[in-house]
Image (cartoon, rainbow, N blue to C red; front, side, top):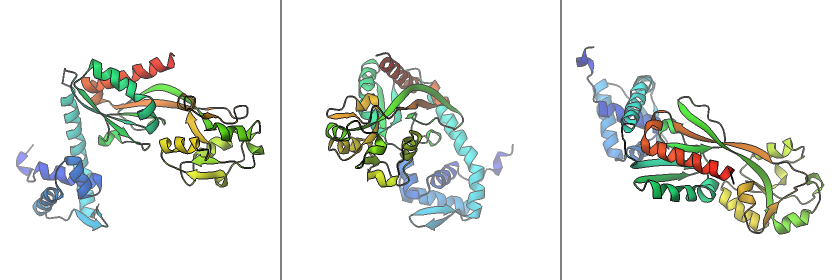
Length: 299
């Protein structure tokens, strides 16, 4: 190979790759823990070296030009190779020390992970865990998290995927609201109050699969936060779907229509990048989560 053909700066190519991937200079600066002016200088220098315009402004972000898109397709394998190289290097560590990020839902962060983290901290005090608490799915391929607990089986390749649980999800309401509905079937209830996640709520499928004629008009409140939904349930503002390991321990909350609705089973998956699985700190956290869920199931 004629190395003299490499006339551009690798750091400038990295800046271009991250800005294009993140969609804006501000997001790229946060991802790289640097400043927007620094990234701007690197990208402008790359444009000058290659005699092309890579980006155009679109609102608060940027979009690739035709030339930028063509070059991004070339630099993408470089970025992925650099990531693989970094992960392989992390795998060489032989001590239980380092940072590990775990993406979890609100309910898992509050009702499941604290006990596991307390035990892990006693066994491996030099591992620092970052909990990314969100009901949105983190992208492990972009290193948004090292490990994730998900309730849909991921379709991405090159991921380690392990089923760790099957949750039973039911409708719950305040004791007063459940008593108000009494022994009626859901379709017999005239003042039905449901709490959903948003317009076009996919949870409607749950009710319809139960043979229940329900529409969006029956949803009295929308709320993306599961923790907030629990408080709305406690205040008697509606019924919400919760896993039974959470709903059954909430004070003043009971299962709704227990004689008419069957629980829905939802599989939980533990997901990790394949190369990161060789890193001792990440493997330690991965195994600790598996052990914790296994112990819960044995109770």
